[in-house]
Length: 282
Image (cartoon, helix red, strand yellow):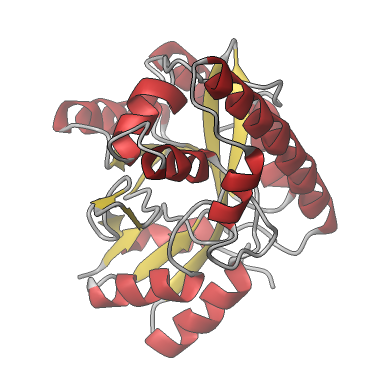
């Protein structure tokens, strides 16, 4: 297939598979390209690029930057970034420190709700797999909730506690989406609004396309239905911007693939040169 999955996570952030595993899975799925887009880190890119050379598959260096708008988490994907750029690395390190404080607040809230888990348990869950920078995310907290019997599985943990509207959902002070877009552009990358259907704020998405500098929308995503995919494809086309897509693969937890398997959401690989262009720097 001449297809590309442009949204996957690895053990460099909160995924369960190594960067090499993601590239291998993409090759086994018959894909031509795969993007590595870990949360607020580029620690998995070097390994993935090496694996891409071995498996004969194009690896798009990427990142998923955490931002917020009026109390809603908004994620911005960066593609073809100069991933060794010192300014970008410093900025991402600052974001990871915010993530750490958020995790502590989530655990404290869960304690208030009668679930006496600890940050030590969460850290131990994260350390079960080697990570490039020690990043801890909500899936690690979910793993502890499941193991302790407070949630049936990953999806249940997010629906009831950790996702938007959940009892322990915390949105810490974050940079604005426009700031993340600027960072990506300054790192010679292409900025795309991730999974817009999860925000239920189409006016915000349109604003980022028209005035915020976003280069595209992730129209195709594991949590988008067909109606949403058509809507965001049309929105991107109307704005003259890119429509990208990907599985948002995080690996398998408790037998459930989160969000979807690699290759389950793809776009034509002809988009990849537009994401890389002259931007693929080492």
